[in-house]
Length: 168
Image (cartoon, rainbow, N blue to C red; front, side, top):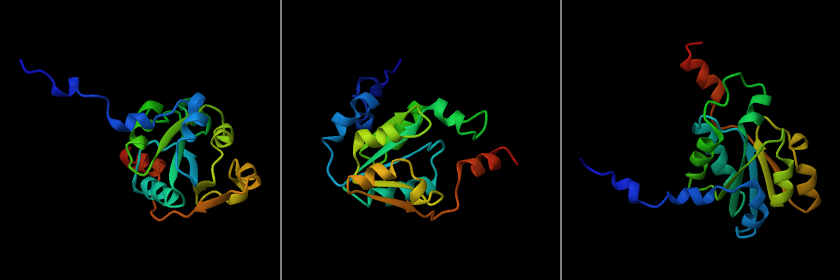
């Protein structure tokens, strides 16, 4: 019987990017500035997601991504079976991206508490959000930061992808 060589390996390095919300302020202090913050569900990662995240990261020296908890996703009304992937799985996939520096999460309906804890220099959301509607914009601007709505470059969505998978 052969043993599993992976069993003796240390945890993958990307797992060090996972950050409990209670340690967010402390962990962000060690990141390079300007710090970019964004948030979302990022349920089934696709080209639109990674392009958006790469564009967000290009606006600063570090990128923090805050994910909706599973309960928070369910409250968004995306469907009874969402999220497809659990928070732990979504966080691991996002953390594995080279241009992401830290991944945290929030159980509230909005990421406002994480924005306040991070004190980002740049706050970013996707093109379906006007800058006036972006949660935390007022707080970031009051501190001298900037807020951006990044347009979509690829017509992709998890909801549409699930529709195709289900044959809808």
